[in-house]
Image (cartoon, rainbow, N blue to C red; front, side):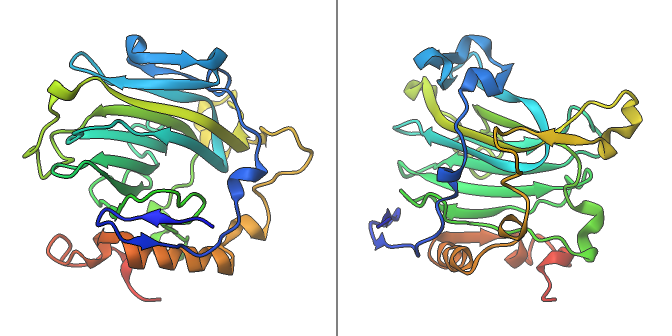
Length: 281
């Protein structure tokens, strides 16, 4: 039985969902990732299987996958910093800004330190084809032990084809100072009296369709791909990964009903005309 404690102390029992994280092989951090930034604030542990990412006054730190992916399944177990963490952001996300600086895609999972309570907010966001001026944030209170429960689905449809993530992306894991935006526009900046802030990463999983660097750089988006896993079949192909199962839909609805407190699709003060995916089909 999976149980979860909300930030308000109530005990929730999410619906049972398939344990997708049990289906994939784990990869050591030093095999699947390279340093992105903050060399002195990255500590490899257990012969490179795990890593600590550190934020202090001098710098944050981050890792980037050695491969880029057209699609895939990516997982990390993250132990969050303790204590007062206002302004601290830990991100596990996909991006191709290095390849496409003017029209990049990005899929974000961000953990935001809270400005008042000693807990965290889970924020997701999506950019496609450089659509950075349309934030698609959703926020949920982070609760414990809700592994494998979906919290968001961003389905493709023709109305958003121009802003739907479609190009190969790298996987990133970072910790950094987001005082300027993470807590009401800098009202509650990072308090380095509580530093260093340490995020511990482990149980990394990376399975999917690896992008192969084309000889002609202009052909990047249409490049072929190869399997990254050890099996002879692609575990992220097929209907099981093309849409959510009924159990996963139940879990998604549970999480959004119980824990979500902000969605851009409900923010009419921000968007006088809501983005097209917000409108009922």
